[in-house]
Image (cartoon, rainbow, N blue to C red):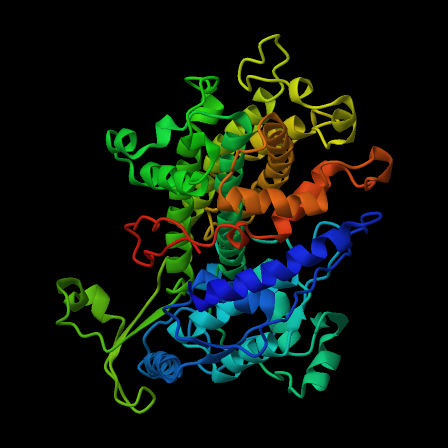
Length: 595
């Protein structure tokens, strides 16, 4: 088991120990701002611009790990600045340096003229504030990680690190980007905060930016500066958090599916290895082996003449929907890793490139942008090109694909909850009714799926409404220069909502499964459930006891109890290792075991 997984499991164990106490009494209203828990401040992660992982991003954005630059990263930024400045000295047209930006791209401007500091945007109304510190920190981090890939000013790069390390989190806004560069929603206010304008949260406390800088011992920028870091850091940050949270949801759905199989006394023949070998979709085969590993040691491997030959399709084939969601998740993960570890900057400095490197570089058009090299670039030559790297595709397509894959999976979750409620005389799917094996007193004192039964159906309907693809849009902004949009904010926001709703749906699934596991125990006390399912069942029973006077139970709806359990406790606490995850074709993919 990796050191990273040990840290996560230790944190999860603490969360599990606290969740019961946290939920006793009434549920407190959520605060307007959600600060992080900086329990990793002693950890230092080195940024190179090329190898930031999702796990590291979470450690920094959500747990306060500190950051620094590698020497190579600092040198790369210095070389890019030198080449850009030399291009200006050689009178080569450079977007943003000696030419204007956007619709002013053909308008000459004086080299060396400082950029105008952008004032912070006023909030309220159509510009609601981002309430989550981890999201803004993720934006800062992605900006910091990609800054060495462009001609960023050293003062700007250092300030990004200072903001992260000292927990200065600018007040930023959820709207203001179409996904073709995230300047209005977030970047403007971040840069304004660096100059002491606007407001920030300093270690979770809201104050004026200038006061936070004083308390942190930092000096504000007093003039313009060249910032060259991720143009889509806001959408990228949302997508990265979606990857992290989506994985946790998928880890839970596999484990709760195993509980459902136990609860229904299901047939497990669809997942046996010889069957899987006949249809070698690697993610499907992997998920089947993963669920079978969770079920190992359970009574489902023992002969039972009352076990049905085939379960309902939602129960029989759920692992296929889950595997498909995992496959979509892996594709999104790979795209996000590429996005946050490569340059989406405009312009791009290609240090060291020569006309002989490829045929097109030697053409007259490309030679217009060739920098011969001089004092400002320390003799280095290269090219300075305008780019379209700011377009966040293909990542945005993968966001929608994952969201839709979750919805296709969630319908199986919703349907299998419903299948336990068969009220026919024969109890067709479960084979028994609770009243067949429980005493009247047990029936009264056990936590059956009794609160408004249609709540989980309502959750599913909301998931369904959010899973619809957004239509492609073109908006001729900036005098027609910015005429297409990716809508990354809307798409990632929907994805995050569907992940959270999936956890809510899984809470009902867990509640129902554990109830029926107790029914199965009452039917035959010798039945074993397997190591991981037993651990989940036992832990959840500490939150929601099996037999308890209804008058003594918490006033908190059981669905909320179950949702808090799965949302605060990683499934890896109960099932830390498993079959090795399939490799992918993505350049940033990692063949790693689930842990």
